[in-house]
Length: 289
Image 1: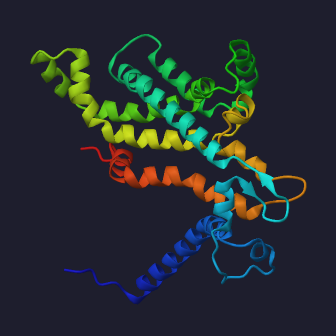
Image 2: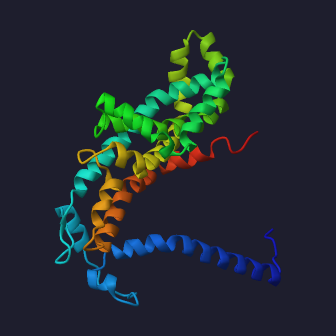
Image 3: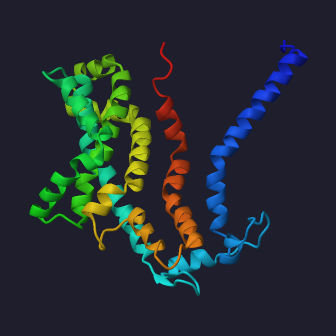
């Protein structure tokens, strides 16, 4: 039988829902504003008060992809496609290396007992929340000696400070949720440690791998400090390439907004594609029997 709600309870629900809508709109407003700027002409952007109704244009996107932004005012040459490709190479490479290294490492931390295990796990986590500027000087000197500045290998390597701790610490809970009895049963049937991991544990933690990989990719994609100090013109990602839109003669708001919209597409498409695994992975272990 459906619960009968009093008028006072209904009014309270309406008020709470209205407050939530206002808060959600406040958080969403900057995103919608940037999205609208990407489809406005320069005159519409500089008009005050900003027009709510305008004729959308793809001029900002075409000039951005064509490599020449600014229109007739403050024209500049940019390489957004090259920056976009650099971001894909560096972020994807960093996440791939972190998965190959982090999944076996997480299994060892979650399953085996050895001296200093928790200290090791905490040290790995400290790489994630430690300020990047605190370690950038010794890393820069180290990279300079090894000639890794402005190289894909160097940036993928240093991005492990961002992606590897996240994957290890997110996956640890998923592996610990896998029943040890399943692994013991496989060992009794003659499976070795590696085969048990590949056939039993790995399929069960696949949603967790998808969730942690997506979050690690987003953090790597948005990184700026490592890329601007250890990279260069050959490996500049979109976060560094965005500085090309700010100059002494002009602020190219429309081109910047178009670049933001295009730069957000990979993470958005990955989230939509892996939505099923992402939701399952983030909720795994939330309910205990």
